[in-house]
Length: 177
Image (cartoon, rainbow, N blue to C red; front, side):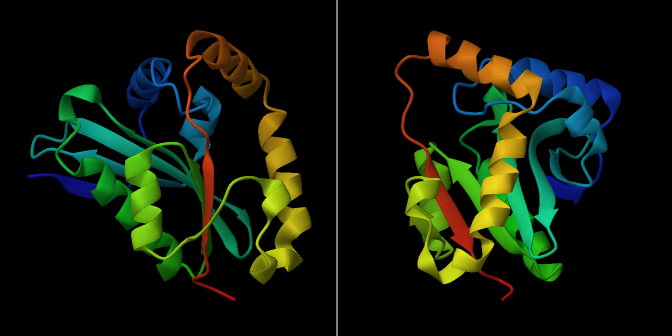
């Protein structure tokens, strides 16, 4: 049985996650420090407490939460764990009265966004009119996100290593107005 728990990750878990994500083409990576400092991580565990997957989420504005990195260890994929993590992350943000923002190239995640009636768009230049008052917030957040040295290295490395990458889709869900 899989249980989803909102908690911080341990040092050893963060190191394990970072190592595994390096081989995942569509997660651009969050640094060890970001994993250790994150307050809103959903962790999938088995009955023995073994980590099966994680979903890193963080607030980047008083009204906005980002589902930033959804990852299930390879040997546990195909069991619905990613779905459980994504939906619990979404519900956690809604309970805290936050709108949700996420970006993904994973077709399963994009389908979940559609099922939850996210507004989908292809890039920040196609910003949805319904949230235009947050445009500068999103631009500022995206710029700050890109300026992380670890992430810049990962983006460059993964662009070279994984040349057949798919396009990312942006999604927003308005749970708070």
